[in-house]
Length: 135
Image (cartoon, rainbow, N blue to C red; front, side):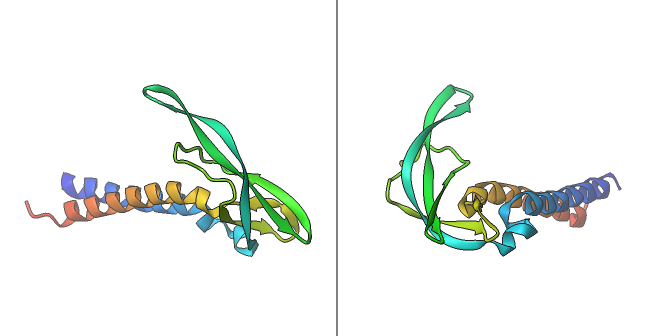
């Protein structure tokens, strides 16, 4: 009986994690579905800090420029990385057609989404295995 309760808790936790992941990431936000995709170019590389258990490391993030109706707009990545960046590289951005300054970089949410989806799926699998395990 105790094993089944634990299994149900794991499954519920997994489902809650998946719902949470879908709500906080780009993929689940309804307002972004109306945004228009365009190509942006990296025009600058900005220094940023990454703090881990060993202290502070310096990384980089891209500053992107995109154009809507002959007007240029800028957006900076949220994520900071030690992976080399390159000026002139192109990336996809999505902007609000009513307010082109309001934009997102879909790639910024991919890492968070992957981690949360894997975590949620792992809880569901662990709970299912526990639920159907024979004692």
